[in-house]
Image 1: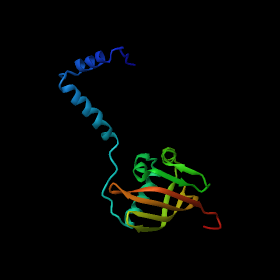
Image 2: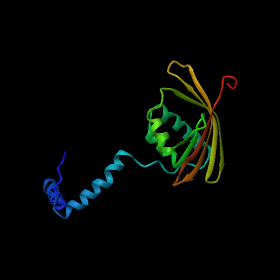
Image 3: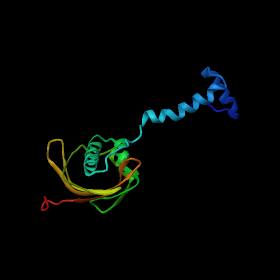
Image 4: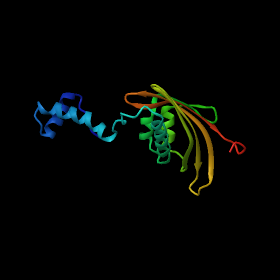
Amino acid sequence: MVKRSPDGAKDLALMMARSGLSPQEFPMKYLLWIVLCPLAVAGPCPPGQAKDGNALIQIEQTWARALEQRDSSSLGCILAQEFEDAGPDGKLTDRETTLAKAAEHAAVHHELSELQPHMNGDNGYIRGLATAMNQQGGLVAKVRFTDVYVYRDGRWQCVAGHESLLTKGDR
Protein backbone atom coordinates (compact mmCIF):
# COMPACT_ATOMS: atom_id res chain seq x y z
CA MET A 1 0.00 0.00 0.00
CA VAL A 2 1.28 3.44 -0.91
CA LYS A 3 1.17 5.99 1.87
CA ARG A 4 -0.12 9.34 0.79
CA SER A 5 1.39 12.49 2.14
CA PRO A 6 -0.95 15.26 3.20
CA ASP A 7 0.61 17.34 0.45
CA GLY A 8 -0.31 16.04 -3.03
CA ALA A 9 2.42 18.19 -4.58
CA LYS A 10 5.06 16.16 -2.72
CA ASP A 11 3.53 12.94 -4.13
CA LEU A 12 3.71 14.36 -7.65
CA ALA A 13 7.31 15.51 -7.15
CA LEU A 14 8.26 12.05 -5.88
CA MET A 15 6.58 10.36 -8.87
CA MET A 16 8.38 12.71 -11.28
CA ALA A 17 11.74 12.07 -9.60
CA ARG A 18 11.24 8.30 -9.83
CA SER A 19 10.21 8.51 -13.49
CA GLY A 20 13.34 10.35 -14.61
CA LEU A 21 11.20 12.74 -16.67
CA SER A 22 11.50 16.50 -16.63
CA PRO A 23 8.63 18.57 -15.21
CA GLN A 24 7.67 19.45 -18.79
CA GLU A 25 7.66 15.83 -20.02
CA PHE A 26 5.95 14.23 -17.03
CA PRO A 27 2.37 15.56 -17.43
CA MET A 28 2.16 14.58 -21.11
CA LYS A 29 3.61 11.07 -20.63
CA TYR A 30 1.42 10.50 -17.57
CA LEU A 31 -1.68 11.68 -19.46
CA LEU A 32 -0.89 9.43 -22.45
CA TRP A 33 -0.43 6.48 -20.09
CA ILE A 34 -3.84 7.08 -18.48
CA VAL A 35 -5.58 7.52 -21.84
CA LEU A 36 -3.95 4.70 -23.81
CA CYS A 37 -3.76 1.89 -21.26
CA PRO A 38 -7.50 1.24 -21.08
CA LEU A 39 -7.62 1.08 -24.89
CA ALA A 40 -4.99 -1.65 -24.90
CA VAL A 41 -7.04 -3.73 -22.48
CA ALA A 42 -10.48 -3.23 -24.01
CA GLY A 43 -10.54 -2.23 -27.65
CA PRO A 44 -13.49 -0.40 -29.11
CA CYS A 45 -16.39 -2.28 -30.61
CA PRO A 46 -15.97 -2.83 -34.36
CA PRO A 47 -17.70 -0.16 -36.49
CA GLY A 48 -18.66 -0.39 -40.14
CA GLN A 49 -21.17 -3.24 -39.95
CA ALA A 50 -23.39 -3.72 -42.98
CA LYS A 51 -26.97 -2.57 -42.68
CA ASP A 52 -28.51 -5.83 -43.77
CA GLY A 53 -30.04 -9.00 -42.40
CA ASN A 54 -26.82 -10.99 -42.78
CA ALA A 55 -25.17 -8.66 -40.28
CA LEU A 56 -27.87 -9.44 -37.70
CA ILE A 57 -27.44 -13.18 -38.31
CA GLN A 58 -23.69 -12.84 -37.77
CA ILE A 59 -24.23 -10.83 -34.58
CA GLU A 60 -26.56 -13.51 -33.21
CA GLN A 61 -23.91 -16.16 -33.93
CA THR A 62 -21.31 -14.00 -32.17
CA TRP A 63 -23.70 -13.63 -29.22
CA ALA A 64 -24.12 -17.43 -28.98
CA ARG A 65 -20.33 -17.98 -29.06
CA ALA A 66 -19.81 -15.21 -26.49
CA LEU A 67 -22.16 -17.01 -24.10
CA GLU A 68 -20.38 -20.33 -24.65
CA GLN A 69 -16.99 -18.73 -24.00
CA ARG A 70 -18.26 -16.55 -21.14
CA ASP A 71 -17.00 -13.55 -23.13
CA SER A 72 -18.73 -10.53 -21.58
CA SER A 73 -16.55 -8.15 -23.57
CA SER A 74 -17.83 -9.36 -26.96
CA LEU A 75 -21.38 -9.41 -25.64
CA GLY A 76 -20.90 -5.87 -24.33
CA CYS A 77 -20.26 -4.71 -27.91
CA ILE A 78 -23.62 -6.14 -28.96
CA LEU A 79 -25.81 -4.84 -26.14
CA ALA A 80 -26.82 -1.17 -26.14
CA GLN A 81 -26.53 0.75 -22.88
CA GLU A 82 -30.34 0.72 -22.52
CA PHE A 83 -30.65 -3.00 -23.31
CA GLU A 84 -33.41 -4.86 -21.51
CA ASP A 85 -34.40 -8.50 -21.88
CA ALA A 86 -37.64 -10.28 -21.01
CA GLY A 87 -36.62 -13.83 -20.15
CA PRO A 88 -38.64 -17.04 -20.41
CA ASP A 89 -39.71 -16.54 -16.78
CA GLY A 90 -41.10 -13.08 -17.60
CA LYS A 91 -38.46 -11.26 -15.54
CA LEU A 92 -36.77 -8.17 -16.99
CA THR A 93 -32.98 -8.06 -17.03
CA ASP A 94 -30.85 -5.00 -17.77
CA ARG A 95 -27.52 -4.85 -19.61
CA GLU A 96 -25.34 -4.96 -16.49
CA THR A 97 -27.09 -8.06 -15.13
CA THR A 98 -27.03 -9.75 -18.55
CA LEU A 99 -23.27 -9.21 -18.83
CA ALA A 100 -22.69 -10.50 -15.29
CA LYS A 101 -24.74 -13.63 -16.04
CA ALA A 102 -22.77 -14.20 -19.26
CA ALA A 103 -19.54 -14.37 -17.28
CA GLU A 104 -21.02 -17.30 -15.31
CA HIS A 105 -22.94 -18.95 -18.16
CA ALA A 106 -23.52 -22.71 -17.98
CA ALA A 107 -21.33 -24.95 -20.15
CA VAL A 108 -23.76 -25.46 -23.02
CA HIS A 109 -23.53 -25.14 -26.79
CA HIS A 110 -26.08 -22.89 -28.51
CA GLU A 111 -27.20 -23.97 -31.96
CA LEU A 112 -29.16 -21.25 -33.74
CA SER A 113 -31.72 -22.01 -36.43
CA GLU A 114 -34.75 -20.48 -38.14
CA LEU A 115 -33.01 -17.08 -38.11
CA GLN A 116 -35.28 -14.50 -39.76
CA PRO A 117 -33.90 -10.94 -39.86
CA HIS A 118 -36.16 -7.99 -40.68
CA MET A 119 -34.77 -4.56 -41.57
CA ASN A 120 -36.27 -1.08 -41.62
CA GLY A 121 -33.58 1.59 -42.10
CA ASP A 122 -31.65 2.03 -38.86
CA ASN A 123 -33.87 -0.48 -37.07
CA GLY A 124 -34.06 -4.22 -37.31
CA TYR A 125 -35.09 -7.30 -35.46
CA ILE A 126 -34.29 -10.96 -35.74
CA ARG A 127 -36.32 -13.94 -34.66
CA GLY A 128 -34.89 -17.41 -34.25
CA LEU A 129 -34.65 -20.64 -32.33
CA ALA A 130 -31.78 -21.37 -29.93
CA THR A 131 -31.20 -25.00 -29.02
CA ALA A 132 -28.97 -25.45 -25.96
CA MET A 133 -27.06 -28.73 -25.76
CA ASN A 134 -24.95 -29.99 -22.84
CA GLN A 135 -21.43 -31.34 -23.24
CA GLN A 136 -22.75 -34.86 -23.79
CA GLY A 137 -24.99 -33.65 -26.64
CA GLY A 138 -28.19 -33.83 -24.62
CA LEU A 139 -30.94 -31.28 -25.09
CA VAL A 140 -31.03 -28.69 -22.32
CA ALA A 141 -33.63 -26.30 -23.75
CA LYS A 142 -35.16 -24.83 -26.88
CA VAL A 143 -35.87 -21.13 -26.78
CA ARG A 144 -37.69 -19.00 -29.35
CA PHE A 145 -36.19 -15.50 -29.26
CA THR A 146 -36.63 -12.04 -30.75
CA ASP A 147 -33.89 -9.40 -30.54
CA VAL A 148 -34.45 -5.76 -31.52
CA TYR A 149 -31.55 -3.69 -32.89
CA VAL A 150 -30.76 -0.08 -33.74
CA TYR A 151 -27.89 1.02 -35.98
CA ARG A 152 -25.71 3.55 -34.13
CA ASP A 153 -22.08 4.60 -34.39
CA GLY A 154 -21.57 2.37 -37.43
CA ARG A 155 -22.76 -0.82 -35.77
CA TRP A 156 -25.87 -2.71 -34.71
CA GLN A 157 -26.73 -2.54 -31.01
CA CYS A 158 -29.36 -4.71 -29.38
CA VAL A 159 -31.82 -2.63 -27.35
CA ALA A 160 -34.30 -5.35 -26.38
CA GLY A 161 -34.71 -9.08 -26.33
CA HIS A 162 -37.39 -11.61 -25.50
CA GLU A 163 -37.20 -15.38 -25.00
CA SER A 164 -39.92 -18.00 -24.77
CA LEU A 165 -39.04 -21.47 -23.53
CA LEU A 166 -40.51 -24.17 -25.71
CA THR A 167 -42.12 -27.08 -23.90
CA LYS A 168 -41.75 -30.70 -24.96
CA GLY A 169 -45.01 -30.45 -26.89
CA ASP A 170 -43.70 -27.44 -28.84
CA ARG A 171 -40.47 -29.14 -29.85
